[in-house]
Length: 432
Image (cartoon, rainbow, N blue to C red):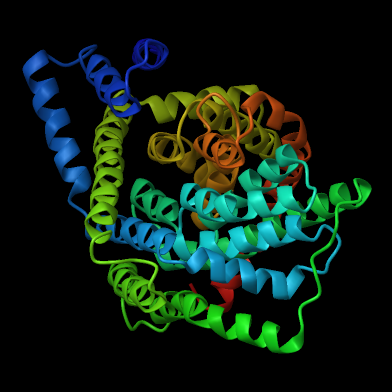
């Protein structure tokens, strides 16, 4: 069995990362070097360029820039504050008070925006000062915000699930969206329980009582924002529009809402559009280079080599599943979610479906849930950096309060991994 291609790929990729090369460049260069092991220079460069171009030639990918734009509009449009007020009405008086509100607000905003980074920024900027004023430790507040911000990546609509659909070769986006609900909600509830226990032990205050008239007012103020979820997911389920068309509707709805709330002006709109374009360009470059790399790995028989290696360790499907999860957890620590999904889906999905008998929808949710943990860990955890920045605290001081949250996320991950019905129940109910 020839391991030359794997060695060149891994060594060149991590060497480039260590010297500070951007992830997309590291992927592209290491992919080219791997091709040069068995292919001449001119065909190698030509083939890689063609694969990059064909990787972006997908109608489903159009949803990503529109959902990114919708998320940025929501982040600027006053939606976060209304969702926080709504969360206070729902759970503000529960043990844990504002910590529980933080989690619920992140779940709602993350589900609407589809971005963990946007959620950590929008909710953290409002909740962190409020929790500090109430006497909460800022490191604990940051830990709650960071861990709960990732729930929106499994609760639809989610750009990462669209990326997985592309990397998997066509797993239904609608089925993935439906499959993400229970795992995402379960993760949020688990973090709520841990946060409430810690808050109770430290005797942090619960939220203030809200009179009925104020509660009704805050509820109705939040309904227009929450309706975005109903319109987007309901429209996809009932076949009124595709996920791509839903992303455009999400942009239009969020734009109208932001202007109605008077939180976004015409003068601010160009900056929102520019920020969205920058983010889209980064994501699309990653997708292009990762698509080329996926072809190279297939050409070099790397997925088959990895499969044979795993099966040589054990023929027990539960052991192999644990090994895959451990590898993905390590990958998530050092690599952002989008390239990780694009690179490792072609490697592990055939093993999961053919050797372990997993449903590809189940595997996709497990994979995304697994990589969510990496967003909260150094050295490249984007949500970790944003959450610490919002709270004004040092990363090393947040790690200790984050440990219980990590453990909670891992428990939910392994429940989802070993109990398929958590992911597959809702898709089966809708016949997906």
